Amino acid sequence: MAKILVSGASGFIGNALSQQLQDNYEIFKLHRDRGQQAIKSRCGNIIINLEDIDSIRKIGITHIVHCAGLAHKKMPNKKEAMDLIRKTNIDLTDKLAKLASELKFRRFIFLSSVGVHGDSSEGANRIDETSAINPSNIYSESKYEAEIVLQKRLSNSVCSYTIFRPPAVYGNGMKGNLILLKKIIASGLPVPICITPNKRSLISVYNLITAIEKSIHCQHTENKCYTVCDTETWSFEELVDTIGCAIGRKPTKIRVPRKVLETISDRVPILERRLGQVYKNLCISSNSFCTDTGWSPKEDQRLELLSAFTTKIRE
Image (cartoon, rainbow, N blue to C red; front, top):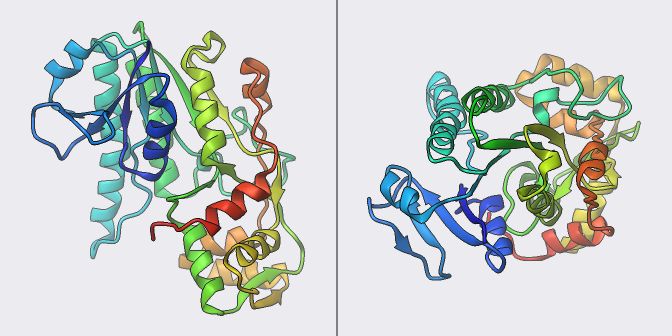
């Protein structure tokens, strides 16, 4: 039985992954804020401190799934926030890759972001792992740099890697922009809707976990990067309507020409990323991963999305 070390196990994706895999694998949760000795959690998983190398060595870890990461941090000093994001996303990846190489893990599975390819698929049919690298923010830059660090560390190691570049992930326990959108809709505040519909890919946490599980023992995924997503794409308005349906609140919409949204984004940079989700396309292809592994996402993504917003969510 594979022994899997999960970083970021207390977060949205890491927690869901640990629960989903614990019936078929031995799961070990990696934390940096515990004492030096390994302890057992209430659900039976062993919690290990990153500095407790002896425990990790004795356990005989075979795989690591690196879910830990920092997307944004509210701090008074912007430079300090950027430095913290880089330190968390790059330095921690390097430290774990070094550990995986030294202790001869079989596989290092890393959750990156489709943002390394940019914030839109404008001018292209769909983004995939062969698309140009074009990170548009510090988070995406740090994720891509972490990918490079990982590949270099494992280049002469018996430990192989698999890198996933997912879009926004939804499910019970999610945080971030989707929860902010839910709050806006629930408050009755008007939501801007682009007159020209866009299309964006998402992925449910369930589908992401099944993709990770597929890659654990698949030789075809060794030392490869993949973009993965749900089958369906969503316009921003479809997403707003689905969230409204889930929470029982009819959204208040205001229709805006794309040119106006583009102008506001250009003149108010702080709004660029969020407004981009209103009018930009971000369509992704999972074809390579499906071909290599036979993976296919769960079919009815609308029900998954409804369930994610209907279920009580940690906010």
